[in-house]
Length: 206
Image (cartoon, one colour):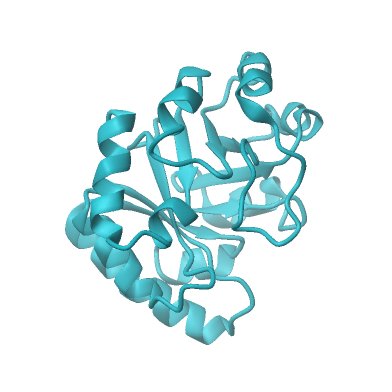
């Protein structure tokens, strides 16, 4: 699978109070072509309703939509795929449910987890946090660009780096050999979400 963008935008309001649908709309207005909907701890019905509205927006703009954690929601809204965590449905089961054409991503938080996940059937892997992050209350130890560069060659899958990445640091992270950078706070907490989206895409080269 070839990721459609070098920036992977994650729709998660965090503590901003933003409406996730409006966040997605602003990201798409700024040029985003790869979104992940990440809403923890909400009722399934509400999640499906939000995901369906965002799916309409991504379809209209030709962008891809990935659903965090929930294979059932991804199927319900006909999303492009799912992003799984360490404690979610096993990749093989997700593939059985989603079929061969939808994407499956998988989160790793250490070199050991990344190497263990290599070759497990995902379309891409993510690794983080690269830098200190405010998007998780109990973040894993920071990896940094030097270690990221060292482990990149150990996996064949496309790799997304995530965690504390901003427009200022994205070029350095991409130079470490990853296929894309994942961003949450740098965009969600920006005064102008669409502008922050466009700035990240500009420095990342699309």
